[in-house]
Image 1 (cartoon, rainbow, N blue to C red):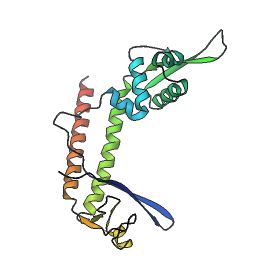
Image 2: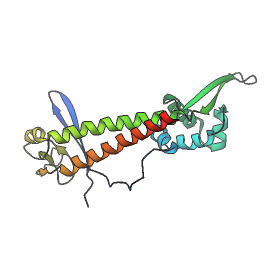
Image 3: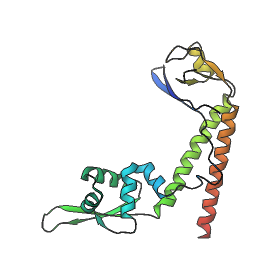
Image 4: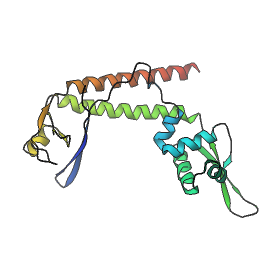
Length: 208
């Protein structure tokens, strides 16, 4: 079973800081799992647990007062407003403002924009795909010449390892050369999977 390393290395060069994240492949999901993100997963990505709770409450309703949301869900008003604005930033929620005749202030009424979920999933998949391709390019260019700390502090390419005399910049441990063939194959597999999912989504959208 392949270990999962996590860590981050920072180094100074010409007055700038560079970060190199150390992440190894996660355990593959079973066939059919994780093909498409559902609503709670997408909402959680952009607004956390409060977002999932609020969207679940708003689903199927229109123009719900922010005060009603806070009261019914027992969530403080500041958290409700911050979360709603996060959802609004990603166009997952829309609102209208009306002036309260008795109190004289404006109240926001919110609606969950469910159709936006599909578009957001597509954008998130595209971003993930770009990041994976960027990492794959780096792994392939440095095939067999990455160096890692045995304590999982850092992962360095050859130039970085040379600069630090093949010692971990965090703990001083002698770096070990890493065989990254499995990492490359894993990244290629993830890229194929996401590209396949994006094609499936495009076909469904065109057929609708």
